[in-house]
Image (cartoon, rainbow, N blue to C red; front, top):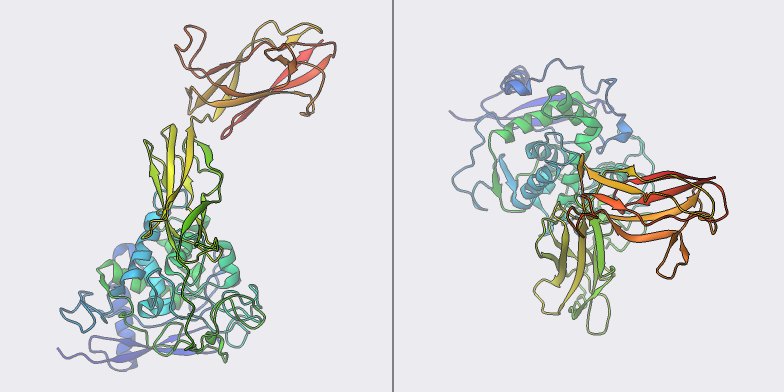
Length: 556
């Protein structure tokens, strides 16, 4: 059957604006367009039942206020076609390019990676990547049809309308023009259209390059996922799914549009080459009418890359074509460690500091834009969050992703090397220590007379999830009753018999070690002596990645 194009108009709550959108499958006229809309929403799966609507833009008590949302109420209103999302067999730009179910390769990979990153973490909420794809489609036409570089950063800025109160919200500048190139008002930025003030809270490093950039689809997709999951929402619940989408843009029309694309993508998608994705024809960021270099809302803000705007400071260019030759980039010649060569963490914990190296050329100057790979060597289940290859910044520093210690104790090596260049490597020694979640005083006297000693040696048991744990690093310190260090009072003795009040490098015992003198998970402290000072004191036991135990001692 021949296909015709009809139109529907979606009412908007912004100064009476009206947008037009295409519907396929033989619809003509306003009445039939309304019927097509009904047919589309009625075709949703049971879990996607849209339910009663409150009307365009009507506030609901359980939603976040508009000023807390990523977007700016500007979005593309096209609905997906009613036919199957199967791609066409041939296309001039690759299989399925230009079809509505095609998603640019890098953009698609970013959505799926964001889902994997959040899954299984304490931020997991049942997020599906298709929801990110639906929002990305509505917000920016999948990053202007996939116009991104190999790292996932948009080739030109994607900016929403100027939020000067003329038809949109009124939000004064919050980023000094750093992201949106506007030093007077804010604008939504990037493929997922984050307002700068919202990005400052929710921005994420999705590609583990040490930078949170709203113009990078990996960063923006992960940030959007975290934002949608916020507040304990569970997106397998219809109510929470609605809440999540409405928190992005508080409009019932927006909710219907996003959920329509969400269901469409769940029925099937396919990968198309970057830059070959279809562009929305309705007004909005990243659409066919949003040419790079032209802003929205009466501003030419798109002519400035984020970081260099009116009143903003940065190192971005101004969007003009500069035909002057660029200087030849420096070549990496060596890696210089920035972090300490040794680090430690308890089982299951993240190492407190991220590893860093600096890439330099033969003259010792920093080299920007070099790929550095961090490789874990040895028997361990430690892992980097989100991959282990990063890019050096303008200061030459390449910061490794967060390193999780895993559950296996012992030492391993992390080696940093430059991808594609034989310039040597830098190595770090990482130690994973057993970790306790509870310390208990299990034996030993807590009262003594002056100028004597505590009759029984103090014993402390380290446990993790109810089980005694050997080899847990601990330290013991004797303090006054206010927790302050003292020069008089209870003390240990060193090998020369001199008083000491701090013992480090202690460990909970391992059963069978040194015959019968050691018990599983038990630290048996040396004898504690007293002098002529009486009163109440504290014996404080600490662990590097776990609890602290204070034991009250009395000398009288």
